[in-house]
Image (cartoon, rainbow, N blue to C red; front, side, top):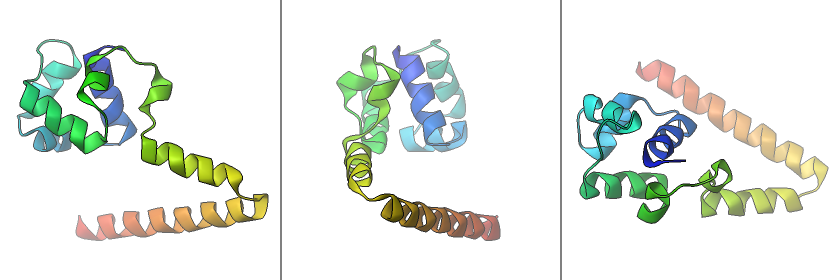
Length: 112
């Protein structure tokens, strides 16, 4: 994956809009669009903001990566812990996470 694909994939994975991404990077939506379509390259300060936000390194962001490497260390740690749980406890964790997501979605709808 190239820089433009990495940027697009990270944003899509996080369900962030072009507008939200532009605010994170401190640029216009048009700039983010141009980066994601390989029409221009972000300045290093913008790349650093993006890398920090997503918890990836600049070298990862700039290199050809496989989709599997999109999992952050924190996400991998959670996945490893989840895999160690019994089937019953996995079910409990999934229920808890679903409730948390539903509550967050409800709050988002109320705010809009």
